[in-house]
Amino acid sequence: MKRLKFSNGDMMPALGLGTWKSPGGQVYKAVLEALQCGYQHIDCAPIYGNEPEVGKALQESFDRGVTNREEVWVTSKLWNNSHHPESVEPALQKTLDDLHLDYLDLFLIHWPVHLQKGVTFASAPSEFIAYGDLPIAETWRAMEELVKKGLCKHIGVSNFSRKKLSDLTQQAHIQPEMNQVELHPYLQQPGMVEFCRANGIHLTAYSPLGSPDRPQQLKQPDEPILMQDPVIKRIAGKHRAAEAQVLISWAMHRGTAVIPKSVTPERISANLKSTEITLTPEEVEEINGLNRNRRYVSGAFWTGDGSPYTQDNLWDGD
Image (cartoon, rainbow, N blue to C red; front, side):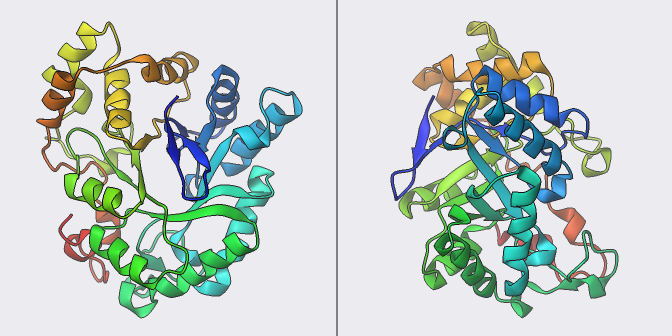
């Protein structure tokens, strides 16, 4: 298993189990299965609505001796309605309680989008707070305090553009160590990869398979289906592997972490076996040639009428 090394020497397994879109009643069994077959990295978030089930599976796995807390890397995220500094620690404490943990390995600001306290998803312009009206550095100071208190070991962000990440690094006392963003062959973000590599920031790829199971309202009728790409299918055939395994292997070949979601035992196991696939340099280059700058998760749900957020100021050209 490839691992990403953090500045203090901590090592994060490059392959983790994602839990976005994992339905209630299934994610508990999925986490149990993943830990049983050898996963050591679980990615979750309160907005996914399933952290209590994830926590139940973690606790049961620890109690049964399947694994132990020190061997499992757990990441969670700060939701958009808890960006006021006084809301940050209570939000993390709720996640820790739900997960039955004393600390997180990694805690991320989920989106560079601010919502009013108590608002889960904005339905009116008044429920947003413009990005500039709540300096992200203030949220970050509260995140830094969590590290000092031992409530999480590492902090980072998710869905941040290079510009927002660069601005944050200039104001941070504890540097962000992770940016979790959409990454796959149709959205390779080479500028982001280069920026993070140059600044000692790790990347985690979400939606690495093109997120074919995301909610219908997030889809477009003419969108390309990544796992049906002829290049991916041909390379998968050569390795006698599934298309998903090739996509996961490619993400790790780039030096990023990757968190495919599944609740199916066979696919959970198959995804773990992606670590055994070695793509040739020629195959990597072929896949590198597939970039379309195509986002499957565009963030359009933040940019409705009256919102202070637009595609331009959300992604800053990335």
